[in-house]
Length: 191
Image (cartoon, rainbow, N blue to C red):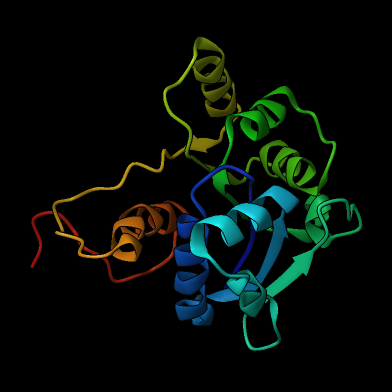
C-alpha cells in the first residue's frame, strides 16, 4: 500500500493532473493515502483549460485523496517521519522546479519535495514547459543529482491515442510506472 503526495503546479497541462487523479482512483486498492496540494494557479488553469472545477470531485470522501492547503506546514508529508514514499508534481512549472532545485521550502509543495529528497525517496517532476533555457536544464540536473526524476510531459503516439485524455494517459501511465504502481498500460512489443 502506497503513501504518496501529488502536487498540482500552476503551469498549463491540467489534463495531466485530471488523468492522474482518475488513474489513482482506479488504483485505490494499491493506495493507503494520497495527499493533494493544488496551487491557486493550478485551480485557475484547470478551470481555464478543462472548463470546469471538477478537481473538487477528487477531494471528497469517496476517493483516497486528502487535500491540504498550499501553506499547511502541519500536513503529515511536511515531515519525513510520516513516511510518504513518493511525490509526483504534475504538472510542474519551471519556476516550481527551480524552487525545488534550490531547496526553497516556502510552501507545502516545495517543503514536501525537500522532505522527499532528503529522505532519499522518489520525487517525480512532470515538467510541462518548452523550450528549455540553460537555467531550466541546470535545475533539471540539480534535481536529478539530488535523486529526483524529471519526466517531461511528452506524450507517445505508438498506442494510437484517440482523445486528449488517452494522449495524456501515455504520460501519466509512465509516471505511475516510475512511482511503482502495478497497472495495465500499453507496452511496446506486447499484445
